[in-house]
Amino acid sequence: MHRKEKNENLKSNIRYLIKSRGETQLSLCLASGLTRTTIYNILEGRVSNVQHSTVRKISNFFGVSYDEIEQVDFEAKEVLDRSLSIEGNMNPAAVPVIKEKQLIHCLDNTIGDLVTRFPLTYYFGAVHNVLAVVLECQRYESYGEGDVLIVHKGHISGCGDHLAYDTKSLTVRIVRAENIESSDVCVIGHIVEERFSEL
Image 1 (cartoon, rainbow, N blue to C red):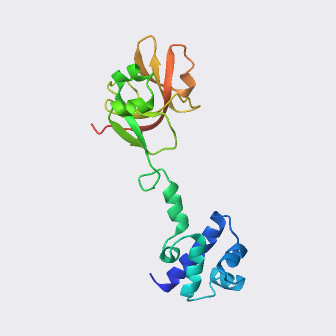
Image 2: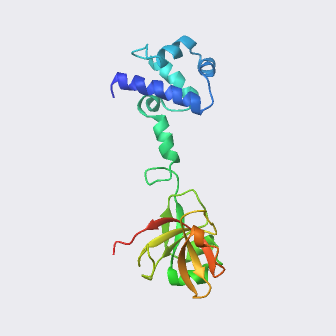
Image 3: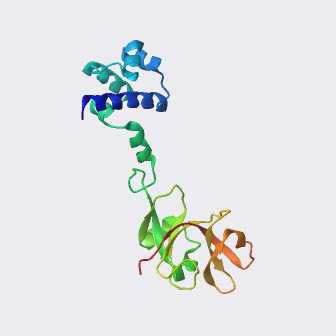
C-alpha cells in the first residue's frame, strides 16, 4: 500500500474512531501526549509522512494495531461485522426445518426442542422464535412444492404473507395480513423469507 493511501486511511480512521468511540480530538491529544497541531495537521492532510511513533500513539489510544489503523477501513469493517449477511460476522440463527405435514403436531413445542429433533438451516436475521417450513403441496398461488418458508412464529405483521392453520380443513394455509381476522384461521407466524425450490 502506498504512503498516500496509508495517510488517507489514517485520516479517515482517526475521524471515524473519534466519533464512534465518543472521543474528541482533545481527549486523543491528552491521552496520547500528542499536540492538537499534530492531530489537526494529520486530519487536514498537511503531513505527507506521519512519524511511526505518532501512528503508534494513536493506534494505542484506540486499542487497534499499528498496521490496521493505516491499512484497514474501520468504518466499513465494523458495518460489515454488524451485518446479518453471509459476508458479515454476526452469527446466524439455527432454524429447525419441518415438513408441512409435520408442522401441526409441533406447534406447541419450543424452538429449542425442535432444533434437537429436526434438520437445521440458517437464517440471517435479527429475530428469535424462527422455524422453516417445507411446503409439500402444490396448492398455493405464490409458492410451490419444495419451497421453504422462514416463519417468525407467533408474530403477526401488518403486511405480507403469514402461515396459518385452517381449523376447518385441518390444513396449513398462507394468508395475507389483511385476511387474518377469520375465525377459522389460526396464525402460526409471519413469513420473513422465502427460499424457492429449484425443482
